[in-house]
Length: 195
Figure 1 (cartoon, rainbow, N blue to C red):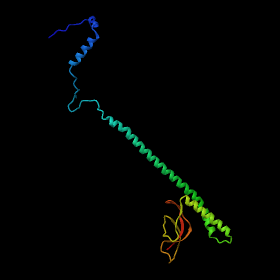
Figure 2 (figure 1 turned 90 degrees about the horizontal axis):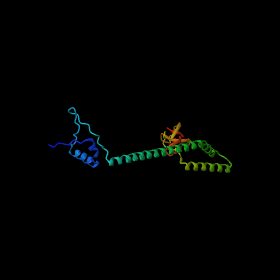
Figure 3 (figure 1 turned 120 degrees about the horizontal axis):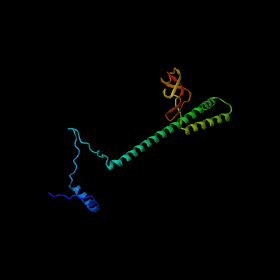
Figure 4 (figure 1 turned 180 degrees about the horizontal axis):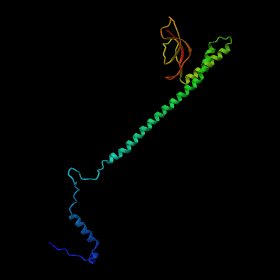
C-alpha cells in the first residue's frame, strides 16, 4: 500500500487548475455507479421518473386532431346556420303570402260574378293572373282538391254531402283554395266531402 502525502493549504493553492480537473476526472472514473433506490418493503416498486409516452409523432397528431375537430365543428355550425336561415326565409315567405290570400279570395269571388262590363272582367282576370305568377315565382302552389280523395293533411272538411256520383271520401266542392310552400301547408283547402 502506498501512503498519500498530506498537502498543506499553501501547496494546494499553488496547484494548477488543470491538475485539479484531472484528479476529479480520475475520481469519477474509479467511483462505482450509484445503485437504483430500492423499495423498503417487499412488493412495493421503487419510484422511477415518469416515462414520456408521447413520441414526437404523437405530439404532432394532437394539433392535427384539434384542427380536424375544430373544422368539423365549424362545418356543422355553417350547415346549421344555413338551415336556420332557409327556415326563416321560408317562414317569412309563408307569412307574406298568407297576408295576400284574402286578396286572392276576393279576386276569385269577383271572377265568379256575372258582369256586363267586359273591360272590368278583363282587368280582374289580368290582376288574378299576375297574382298567380307572383305566387309561382315564390314557389307557392295551390292544393288540388276538386275530385281528389280527402286528405286531412291538406284539406279542411267543413261539410259532408250524400252524392252517389262520387266515391266515398272524395272532395265534392272547394269553398276556399288551399296553398303550399314546398312541403309546408300555408292554408288548408276548405272543402265539402262526399260520403
